[in-house]
Length: 315
Image (cartoon, rainbow, N blue to C red; front, top):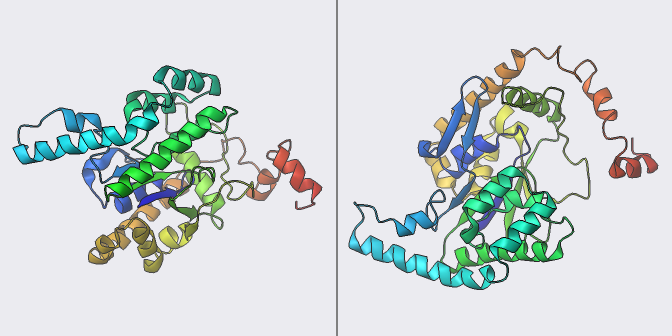
């Protein structure tokens, strides 16, 4: 199965990746900031092979691997190459990066595409598609759609799962045969926005003014097929809601066996985040001199969506 979870900025994307998708595997934690309780964790998990290694996993024999294991790896590698070849033949590397340049591809996305070019049709890189998809180049759009469908098809063919965690739902043309879930923050947007501000403020080049994260600001934006509540997961540590999250990733057995420990980890994470907010001085940050509703009402007055809503008198 191909799964995608969307957690808005500040809504626990890395915590969920680590504890739910990776089932608490500490080797998947790239970094952890003790001051802000901020994890950095790999956001793509494929059962085909270690998502951190790709081609290296197949081509560099490890001393402790048996002859049988190496033979199996070689067979799997050759089959995957055969399956992705038709997709790779539809666009050259040079053309792909030329379109990326013209579309304003982000530095981070460029780096990912550059390092993993030969694996686009087998690993879900759609988290980085947003900077180049639906930017006016139909050829690139069709190619990215084909890459993602190829990824789903190959994992299904080889009876393996793939999952990833991002911030925002994909365009509906990309969400073909993909199971999707969203973290609903509708009743705690201000709290999430404050937490995101504090965590990003500690980063180099971080936020220097108030940042607001509003769910459903554009009703026409892509939506996931189902959702779980951030408040129930973290504020309330609701066991049924946490289990639903684990079940989405197919890791419910891990939850059942470790329920008390997992619920405690969710509670500890939330309480730490609450302290991060409580101990931060917002008084010197532009945007915090007014209350949330007033601030929000003053944002994006010139946007096309805002004008449309005002015309409907929804504000």
